[in-house]
Length: 394
Image (cartoon, rainbow, N blue to C red; front, side, top):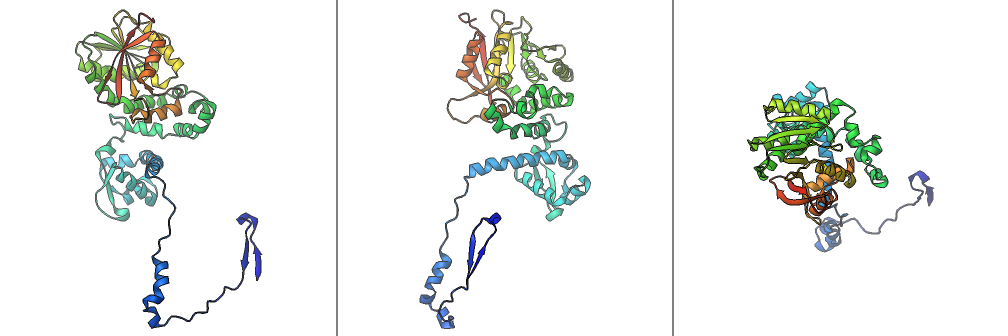
């Protein structure tokens, strides 16, 4: 018998080697092989199923896999695959030659997005398989009005990925992901580069653009003659409200660089006779004298304390009869599903803000001397919270 001590780096186990005992059984004859009684134990061993480790729950697998799919989509956008397929269907081999990339991994990525509905196979096999963009894939093209490409590149960009990697430390320290990973708040970071700020504005179109028409259709503006969109970005919601209400005029209030981009949007839309822009900061005040003031997708990005500051700033501009329209996700109580819950994770990673329930909005508004008149649901995820000065609190 030989004792062989395995090196500690491989676990420190001792292996004992000796000749294996030989069973004293004759080799089976042809008759024995055909004898069911002799094969009974062997057959039992062959057919017995060994229990496997229980698989991870499918929902968890889907959650984890979604991270790989999101990165794959961003990679195809970054490499130019989407733009090449926009011209005409192409094979994997052709895409590899045009873009100067390895065809084999490219094939895996394209096939993965085909299963997700972004491209479709148009025939062929192997590296000669041809793919074409679907209608959904077309939204990833540069210049598409949905701005989906900007959303993908922003949320899958290095800055946001660094913030996501910092999420455990964000929770431990209470600082936001950007404060941990980038050394400043998200909004401070976005303003450091003009192109980054412009992409952020376009990303907001992708995140909230589908809500604008839904809000305009659901909320009756017949009572108002003019509206100020506070922190209104590129002015998409204001223009939707004006398009749905011929009597209405609008003003978009935002930081100077954003207001300048909003002005260009207004010019392109042909609404300069009914819509204007004002450069300003909603923490510092709003224009006085309007009938309606809108805060759309603003409060969810700020802490409760900052929200009260913003709301008080707007409340100071409200004249008798004026109303504030808060357009936000209104989360149901408990753990009922709602699209805003996914957005809440984004807020948790990047800001001190969060999505809120109706009761949480009531408390915020009350702290600023406002009360809720009504909550109007829309065909989208957001609702319109109509508020006014509370004479008992203001």
